[in-house]
Image (cartoon, rainbow, N blue to C red; front, side, top):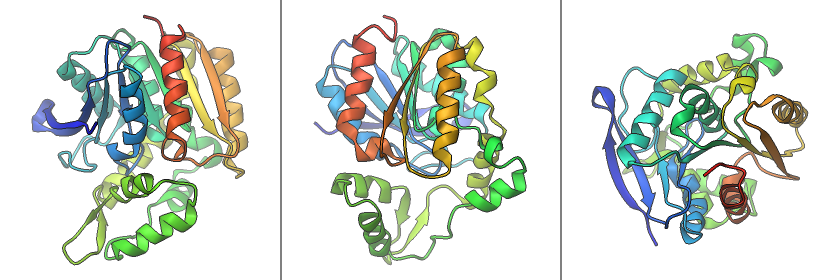
Length: 286
């Protein structure tokens, strides 16, 4: 079943596009994308959760996709306030908030700031990202992770690159990832998230220290991490072990080896299964 897509008004006139699947009476899930991504990357997971009886909403964060693009607010405090406002607009009672990459760190931040509003947090190859461990200097991080200048690139070239780089992704996953970009009438693309706002959010992620929040986290944390075979995998292993040892609400780590950073696109069925089992099996409280 296709989702119901609406625009939810938050504070300061900001509207966020939200895709909702009605599900049933099981624990709801709010799905949050990563930096410069969009809600469609979660669609295959959301559809499976819906079939398993979970109400689901996936959101385009401010500045991303079809949501409003204000000139300010690209920091963790504002994004978590947006998500809290969206939970209220949806009328949900303590959903699980699951985020991929930067979205996972936002889920942890939201669980820390407003534990009474959520029943758990999930980081899909995210949640415990601490960029300062790998790049102690912001300038080095910015240079390494600044987005490529894709404006003016033909959409077909981007689509074919995604297919070659991820041969095990479905066509739905490729199309969802291409939707990170606006396709212009001349067939070229440009990012929905502007370069300056991308850098602003990247800096907020670099400043974020989830390890300092774990002991005071009052709800359970599920980490679904990718063994990508790169230099960052060992850092993720250390972060996962730290979460298991210190998270005040309890933590569990599941690994995909090998796995892409976009695990929710690569393995939507398995990710949906892990989320549903955590919600129905007692890991996330009723």
